[in-house]
Length: 97
Picture 1 (cartoon, rainbow, N blue to C red):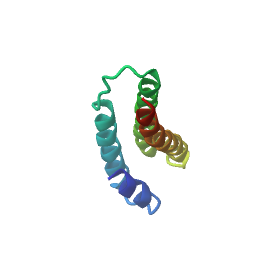
Picture 2: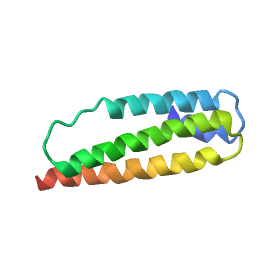
Picture 3: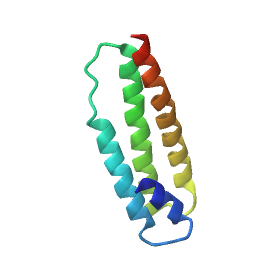
Picture 4: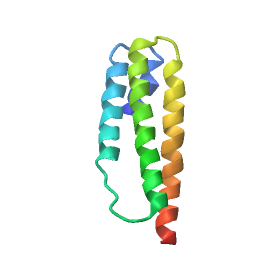
């Protein structure tokens, strides 16, 4: 839903911010509710970064409503970069320990 909302926002379709924000909120809730009970400090740090990235995606949804230019793209880019980074680093850390 987040990808669809972000892609369709360019066309000016009115429900696009709603679709994106709902998808980003569901993704953020999934990230927040995924616990890590281990003792690895690096994975704990990466999990906090992952949650921060998810919150950036939600902020991008809020900016879609209140800022009618492309400010939301910066928050989306930061959140996406953090999510991509942690998606590769967490499995690497799990292999080490």
